[in-house]
Every structure is written in structure tokens, then in C-alpha cells.
Figure 1 (spheres, helix red, strand yellow):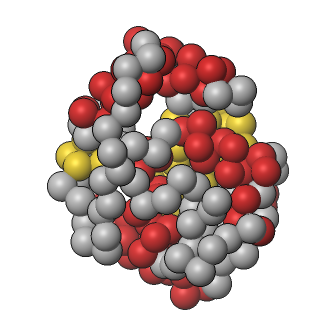
Figure 2 (tube, rainbow, N blue to C red):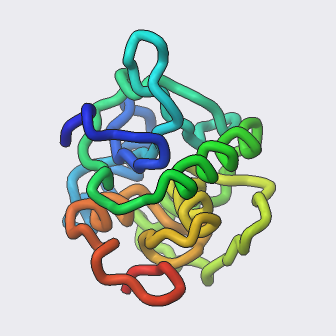
Length: 181
């Protein structure tokens, strides 16, 4: 992964400082044969010092953070995005700032590690949801711009889905709906 190639709208899959929910999400990734990742962030801009600022869903709300605070594992910088799509994502990120965190989705992540059944898909559509987590936030942004994204338009997308999407470059094999198989 090269930080130099990252532009607004690119999704970066990362490891954060360890927490109990983060440990469960990393275990979920390992159970699905992916690297132990626990977070997804979307590039928003570079600050005046050239550092990458990301938009992310975090325990409290959607907000901005420095990518340097995390260990970046993979990205989708190779996925084609137009300037209009990138600008649209930045506008959507700005509109979503302050949106509440989706704690139920985190409980579903933890439950998946414990082998509990997962709920059925929850399609957000084009409107801004009332609550989001990092991985579903990125899916919502991509859905709004008609870009390929992992695992459908779904509340229950987890960081390992984005890790697999990036690793396999699944954006190359998309359906007309912009969802990957």
C-alpha cells in the first residue's frame, strides 16, 4: 500500500489501537481468512502538511481523523473513480459528519465471532442513515456514487469485507448495480 497514491474517496482498511470490540472484529476477520483488521476509513483530504485526513465512523459519531493514527493494511486506490465521484463523496462525508454510531451493528460483529446468526440485510438506499459504522459508512458513500463496493448495500458489512474487496480487486468484477458478487 502506498499512501502517495491515496486520493479523496479511497477506502483504507486499518488496524486501530486495540479495544475489546476491535479484538472481536479482528477475530472475525481471521475467521474469514483475512488479515486481522478492525476499521475502515475513507480519504477526505490532505492537510497543509501533506498528512492524509480520513472520514470515519467511530464510537460516538462520523468524524475526521489522521490516517497516521492507524496501521494501514490495504486500500482501493487502484479502483477507478471520476473527479465528480470523488467530489460527491467528499460532499457526502461533510453532510454525514456527526451522524450517530451504530452500536447494534458492532454487537452483530461480536455475535458473528461467537457463531450467532446474522440479521437479514438492511438496505440504506440513497438517504443518509441515522446510524452508521465505519464499513457500512464506506458502502453508503460508494453506493451514492454508483461505485462498486463489497457485500451489497448492507448495514452488516464488516471491515474484513472491505479487506477482501481490496485484496482481490473485486471492483473489476461488478454487476450493473455496482455491487460485487
